[in-house]
Length: 383
Image 1: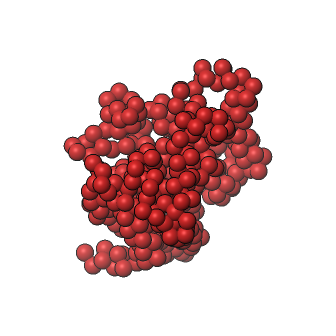
Image 2: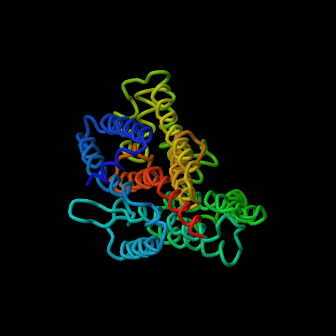
Image 3: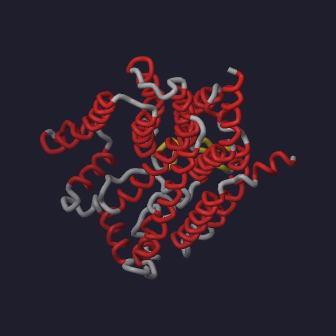
């Protein structure tokens, strides 16, 4: 018991304080988004989830992260893929999307957990190269499959936002894994090609694009490329930007949020709530907390005594940063609208669980860095 208590004393205090700050801000934002509605009181569930998920977060922090970047990563990844397939056939349909498995009163979204499993498997593959240049067939193709297979399944749910997270994290991990510059350029070009193709079809062959995409997907592209073309289609984005702008320096009473002009204000659109009700100051505090958290994660990655720890923390930091950028960007007109939550702030049990598991892994890297160094020194002395 004392062994684990000593480990708990090694928990990274700055990370825990930043997590607490984000959770307080998120809980307040959910309360503001749902106050006076039929969802009033939803913030209480946010508090319950946070307290409950502290347990698995701390358990993972106490375990050596090398357990998860080893053979166990493939087991977790396989379970995740199996759950994604199960969702396709028995998942719960909510608002036209089939993404959840009901477990009692809890709705589990497996795609949130598969993101972490993909990062773990990639860490396992990258550390085998020991920092050497990645080979195209032996390394890049398997790693690409690790990300694109679940992304393809998730797009069928449909859940473009979560699928994009896989695509966004892949280049980060490959760059850390020492990918060749030419291969990275080819990867980025292959990612940019579909985006360019959609834009070209939109302006040159609209009918073809209309046949390829679902109506709601086409509507979001129209709203992004030509926001003034159809006010009805750009209603969500326009209201979001107006709400954020109306918050000015210190916020207001919440005209847009309180009158229901912001869809899903308690989840995907939670940033709008902060921007309107807490103004520039509230948004700045949120961004500062995110910046400090990502910076701290990168510091822990830098201090890690082995490649697996560095790969793991940078991959998780990239995953969180991508979600932050897309979620905020889509509400200020920088990105098309898509369903993606704001880490630690949006209401949602599965996303919060996944994010806290990420923090647990980061804390594990910090706690066990000295153990890894001692093990490496011991192996060196034996040789």
